[in-house]
Image (cartoon, rainbow, N blue to C red; front, side, top):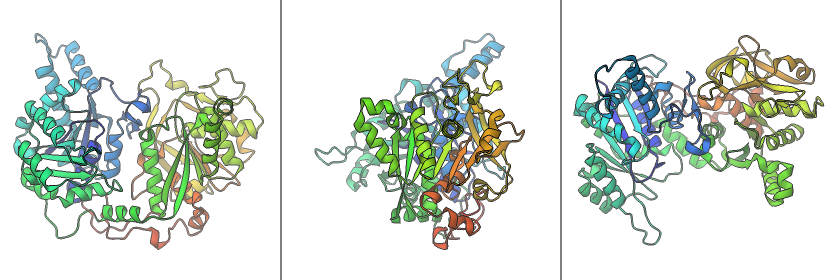
Length: 590
């Protein structure tokens, strides 16, 4: 029987429900169980595809082209699973499915209402999706972790709370468990940990018919025993059911914190889980990663030149991919966020201090990354940064729009096409080096791009990026774009050493660029950050970090092998739940 774990949140949004949900899944997966995850977002949008990154952070893209909440990225990275678009449930999707049924006549003669029709649709969706395999072995999951976005008490999440109130009786108590994540603030004026927000939040949740089995308290310092007992008394739970997650040095410590507080024993009793309590330390891999992360001393800095730099969640997967790669080579990562508009001449006139600070950040970094984006604002600043990286022989990685702008920069400054541009920004340009894909313009914005996993074929044996991918003939990576490099102008670039080393299956889409006579100048049309994992860094990002730390040539000469001190021990857990003691090495990343 499927076991369901619902994670709700109280007091404030953005409290860390996604990381808690991912960590719970990670612990259960390390016990040998197959785990899946569902994220519920109470907004009315059908998906996250049309959001600005300033709304909810980055838009994460799945293999099937689903544009979803960034928490699904956390699930995939923590659990090393592959989710589908239906693992992200929104109010919009539920209402759309119910209204479609109503128009089709499925409810003929009935008044269609929130209860029971909407709540039934939510339960059916969860039960159906929880059975879909997310592991490479195709086995049906045994545990489903469900994260309910927002905060208990929000108007928009009420139908979901009601659905799960009914659901707990439908699947029976021994198959359903609720974790409530709450905040325990510590005002500077008194320094005392306050339990009232948690009490109120739990009272509200219980008033809606859900009684939490575990209360996870987010706090800045470890929870005092007296505070824990107070929460236990006022919130109708045992002291062992109050879990403390205080601020830690690295996210990798969160599963370890949960495990130290006996969460596995509790789940085994509460949900009657088929887990053998093996006499070995679980989560060796996570302990090793967090220990390594804390020990790092050597630094490398990457300039992230983008337009959404005020909110780091806008580039969550990009930052994670950089962190995975830095950790792999034993370097501490410093990301220098640069608003690309600050690099433009117009800023020099209006705000000279901002302009010079931005250029100082760029010039003092070890490598340059230009991530994806949409819209014309800041594009000229990105082109300036790319020009600097090319001329100064600084390691450079361009992703999606970053690659397209690298093409524009080369066309302008090497080929001499001064007005070279993307038709997205200048439809009248006489040198359209980046053009709109003809089949991806049906007039609607939502879900109409080239999305999801696509194959890229390597066109040469000598490319650096191919070696980083383990000398593979092709790679499957996730895409999210509406514009592409103009294939008709390809030969002009290749004559000058700007090579298109990866193309799609038909040879019509330019997927990977590489510049000759440069330490590392790579552009990719896809988004490799979406498939980066803590133990398996994404090869394009890995190459950038190797080049930025001066290790790339040595790595390639050794046949893509890291020195022994940089590999993880063979005691680490594999990401697949059944395999034990499998050796983990970074070098050949497929």
